[in-house]
Amino acid sequence: MAYDINRFEQIGRIARINEFDTATKVVIASDRRAPNGNGGKKHTSFNSVTIFNKSTRDYIHEHVEVGDQVGCNGYIETGSYEKEGVTVYGVDLIAIQFGLLSKKRESED
Image 1 (spheres, helix red, strand yellow):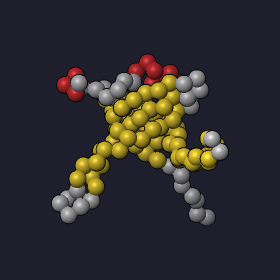
Image 2: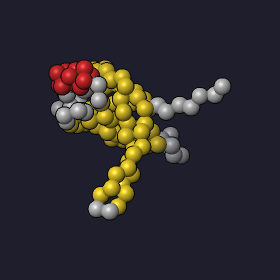
Image 3: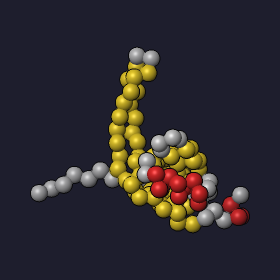
């Protein structure tokens, strides 16, 4: 039997941390090489990742800062809501695992 997969993985540096009552959202900046005729040009993607797990949220609050390198994985969820009579669609990255890989180096200020 074949199984479907709904998963994301990301390693990058923290660009922003927003803490809310029931969730923490972190923006992670990750570089990638866009294919072109000259071997690829660097492009940075900024992805917002949502964390609901309370112990992970507490860990982020106590140990993670902008500039730190982190890794996370989880699942992708789509949703929608109404705003002024218009349906707004979105995609959320929901983290299941989240870890600090390295602290920001002082020279990166």
